[in-house]
Length: 445
Image 1 (cartoon, rainbow, N blue to C red):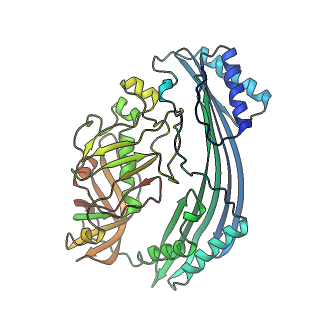
Image 2: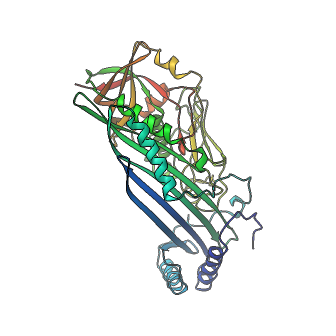
Image 3: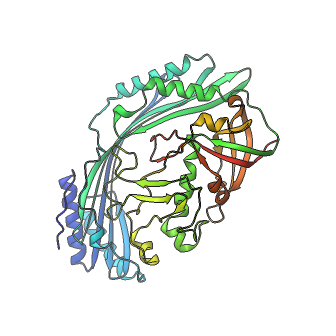
């Protein structure tokens, strides 16, 4: 039965291809079919030392077909959308499904969960920048950075403009699609003073070009971050209160989301596997995942299965409220999908109540972490151990940079001890304010 959904802006030709694939797969014996197409165009300019380094344009299109024969399921994909190739692809997918072992949890989502309509999210900006405009942006950013005498080189800057079309349909009557845009600018510079050399960067990513950082901000921030790392000192091992800069603190949400994914919960490979409706943070902490933020970097109309994406209050007053669920693992756990096939959307800690300056004055000596190194976090146990660098705070003031230390703890205890600042900004798809965690282990010299 055809479902009457409000259609978003989509490519009619791609829509016809989806209809063709679904119809032919059904004729060849599939009981259900899902077809997705993603088409993208990306233009990137790379810059180094105020000169053009590289210019690149890439056009990509990919089609995926998933065929079900009752509880058997097989998926195939291709970048060739010519009719002759599609016929072979459909044939191969259906024939493979016939010999695939059954899994009682294989199925398309329930029809009642499909996306139907929503307000406009303003995810597509038609603005197109010619290469010269991109070059001018990067040239200005680097010129501003080089106004600082301690900036002696760049590790490269880049500007990327990407336009994407997404279209998804299935044999239960769902078909919809939408367009997105993304503009990204990056500047990394090298600082030097009395033999000490350091590097750091600034990065900005937005759906609309007008929302990007100005090139002067990009360059000046990159220079500021690199200069403040000059002449780093080593510190003795001990227990320290640590403030995680916003660029680093958002990584805790990545660990958190991995730990509450349907697959991790079902397999028991998560330090949060038995924590639903239990306290995992302090009472003041709330975590939200929202797909409907206008112009949000993570915003989307529906998930990878066509399911409407529910706004989730994942943590409310410190309690774990929900998991991130798709159809397959939802069926395994007897929970409906909440539209998280493909992961989180705009995931963030809600703002804390204290400003950063207050947190910086909460102890005479605090380690302010601006960089972490390595992948030393175990989602099964919650054990956390990473190389780190940053700045020492003494009596509320930044004093000297620190390098070559290791910070360690366990996420179970770290979550409970977190204190959030009120400086949340939506610069990424995952966002966090600055975070203070007291009494962490720091291994130095």
